[in-house]
Length: 458
Ligand code: UDP
Image (cartoon, rainbow, N blue to C red; front, side, top):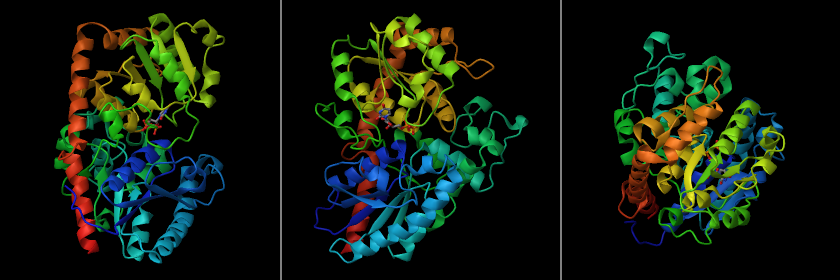
């Protein structure tokens, strides 16, 4: 339990300005607020307007761009991060100074681990600093080991499958792409490694995962990465099944077509619908989109497909009309609501970490179509370790073909194996709820953090 005391504890939460980072950090801010802490989210001007959550103040800072910064930097991650570092440090400092003149001075900055410079800002102002890792502990472990020099990349062929303490053996298919092909992604690799550059100065570190899901990994690396598992950062209304009227995380970078999805789902039988989404960033090849499209048609299932506007041109010509009896294709929705709906029977996912945690937390079986980065190890865990779905095989060009898709979907939706998958999904749902519920492992870790800040504040 959190000590019930009046406190002036104020935590500034700094997410990376992308949907998959804002969601978990905003949820963390909401959890802190529910425990009597003042929580403020500091984010770029262009994302600040997309966030509206009760009891959370949102403050704009600058990344040096006027509009969507990453796009303005021509998707040059190095340029974007360096501009954010310069302008973000300056404007974050100004924000802290502003609050220092008020009755709510900042006590701690919880920052996205992609912004290690925020720890320097915290220390300059004499406040606590804690990175928040938005991927799995397994992924943290891999990159932390590379950063410490315990693991060399690229991994030599004779070292495959890769053995990392606490993780299952990883063959090349399940390695994060930046590890498999480090030369192809120098800026991303640098960003992933920089997360660990100043951890020795951090006061806490948080990972959006939970003990029953990944305890072996965290134990195996406790000395170099003593992170607290505080997830899953999924709004409690969805974990408890109290979803009517809930708005999800409270942040949406695109306009969600919730009403349309809700009405369409209402008429469908329980567990009859396949929900498909590849998240907020991934861009599939047109060839892969077509294979999925024809696979869905051939399966004859009801499906609800979130395909961002920029991706819709990849659909086969006339496809919408062809499938209008069975399928709804929208540009964005509140994913939590779709996953929590009783009509949803399977989630075809790119295995981003939030989507992974959301499917586990809501007990929805998955069909994994990971595209790159950490999605590859996430897919391996979903299929082989947590056993809540299938990862269909790609052909030599990296494409999951229509027939493989159709066969795999059938295994997840029907028959003996699907029952086992559903049982496992339901087990993880209960364990996720337990972890964040009162007295659960994640709840305890948040309470320890809050209690520490409150007692230090006296
Ligand atoms: N999401 C959503 N509506 C959609 C698709 C995705 O609200 O139509 C949310 C989803 O619930 C998740 C986030 O966007 O919280 C995507 O994060 P994830 O880590 O799964 O993938 P990313 O977009 O970072 O690749």
